[in-house]
Length: 117
Image 1 (cartoon, one colour):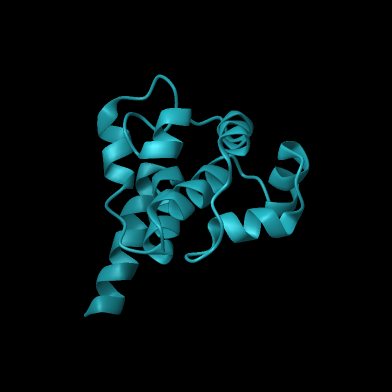
Image 2 (cartoon, rainbow, N blue to C red; image 1 turned 30 degrees about the vertical axis):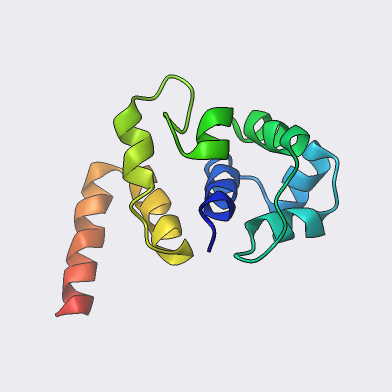
């Protein structure tokens, strides 16, 4: 999966937007968003890339280049941590894990330990 397609999906999920809702807000069809998030899909033009950043509440620089923080005002360590996912599943898992409160994170780790063992 291309790094840009992962960041677009990550931005959309972080904003809790469906593909259809992001498409509506950006002014394209849902199939365009599907293509942008597909590993071998199309790349949005600069205008659409900026609109995605605005609608998802992420930094345009992070979305376009992976440099800097994902969200304006975040520290650079937050952006770098998100780029360690190896694929779409790990990226989704990491985003969901980060949203959990500390106690549920510990429970999730115990579940993963049991599954790995």
